[in-house]
Image 1 (tube, rainbow, N blue to C red):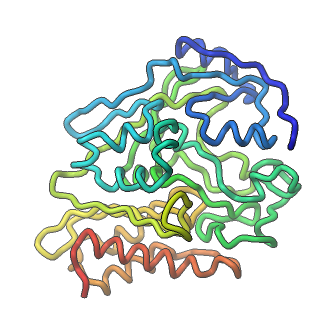
Image 2 (tube, rainbow, N blue to C red):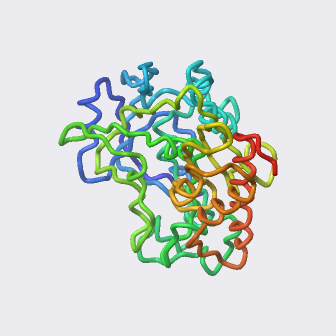
Image 3 (cartoon, one colour):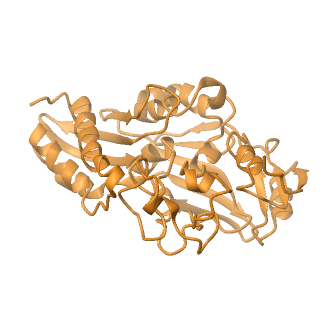
Length: 332
């Protein structure tokens, strides 16, 4: 067992207090549900000098507006999954949440924390392994030459091939959700499609948050009443497992034509992957399995697989085709 680095614990009673305690040097961390953060601290992967408990902040709850939901960042996964508007207007969000974790974890894990969860790459999560550019910039990527069956095939670089783990984020990227954050310089909003960063040369920078900034809410557009959506998750076992490939799909149909489409992939990329090329293929076209296959091929264009995870290219395409069939009812 690796000894936990000593840290200062602070329980914040107000948003301004939390941000002030965090500072801007990047050495502090916020604590909400703690479902993975505490494990990573125990293993010595995360080593904040100060841990700021934000569970008492008024950042929990769901506001219902005509075309959007405003979800407080401390809202739990189970609370969002149980929301009746989510069930009616965003069924694939509910599906993603219910397939993410056990009920016990969903009752603890927060929406903000889910969007910020760290990769499940074994090289990142094992501090005794020296080579991980996410954890130790400049050390190399052990997965590239080591075990990489579950690693990414899209959005990779020569510095990192770790997959992003969130199911929820895949659906929210497809919806063009917006993240509301607050820091020392005040509040700002970030489109979720631009929030995550592909690894490039510095995989340790995973998102657009500045040091000390805190996610306060997520603004989620509602799908049109007539839209159909589906989240399909393919994994090694039926429960409590992360995706090998997943597809979030929402479409509106006009007779047998796809009037509009939203598509995102999970389990195969370094970030929740918006498949805009697939959307372009689908929009305005006559729905058919052949069309879905063309869209799926476009979705994985540019994939860079390694020997152990090359199967993911085909698996991602099959997952997307199956999801499109489910929402359209087209089987031929």
